[in-house]
Amino acid sequence: MALQALVFDVDGTLADTERDGHRPAFNAAFAAVGLDWHWDVDLYGSLLGVTGGKERIRHFCERHDPAFLDRPDADEAIAALHAAKTRRYVEYVDAGRIGLRPGVARLVAEARAAGTRLAIATTTNPDNVTALLEADLGPQAPGWFEVIGAGDVVPRKKPAPDIYRWVLDRLGLAPEECLAIEDSAVGLHAATAAGLPTVVTRSPYTAHDDATGALAVLADLADTTLADLTDLHSRAAAGQS
Ligand code: XBP
Ligand code: MG
Image (tube, rainbow, N blue to C red; front, side, top):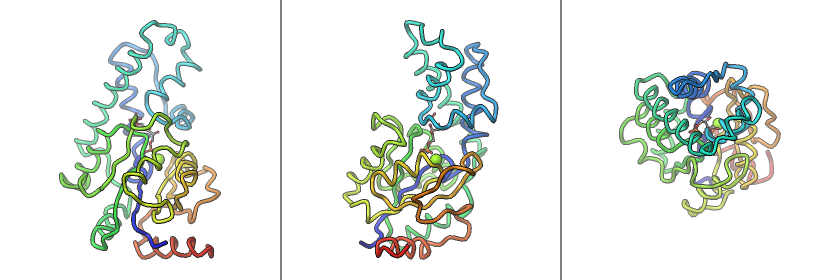
């Protein structure tokens, strides 16, 4: 089946957002309500296996502050922390603190010029995706992505395949007609479990992730053209990769 759509992950793939974007936004939200939690670079790396900010906060509490979860309003407190974190993160993005990874803008432009459809499948909050696309690609950019699957639209986040299935359903495409671009083992698992051939572009936090099952593992997209991706996709479809 010919390649019809590129489906991009966001964090770690479109942009290197975690260490200097999400992490300080979480920490600022914690500090603003007087919590003494601080996620340093290493601790944050160990928390990234749990996708979704609310889920990550809960996971942290289970290990480091279980009493917080005994509060009768624990769910609401986590949701409020996450909302505050999202506001901070969007401020950072709007201020131009988070640029796209090499090759991403060019690849998006190539896909648009070629009529290859574009979509997003991410666990992050939709506000974060819109802010990133607008800040780094321009105010029209969210409209270039026909489907944006983000955050809580599915109950089970990556590594579950649900967000990719949600996106495929709305694109009206078979998984074999798409190519996923992911940076992490968790994302690779989600995409391949939904049947999408997947290219991995490693990011700092995912440099040592297991990439078994990826069509290709790249340092970044700087030297990768749409023609390269189309070639990888067609070789995989022909069972030659
Ligand atoms: C990465 C994630 C997200 C972000 C934080 O998503 O796991 O949870 O770390 O964003 P992906 P939120 O690689 O799928 O783009 O706090 O908005 O969840
Ligand atoms: Mg990612």
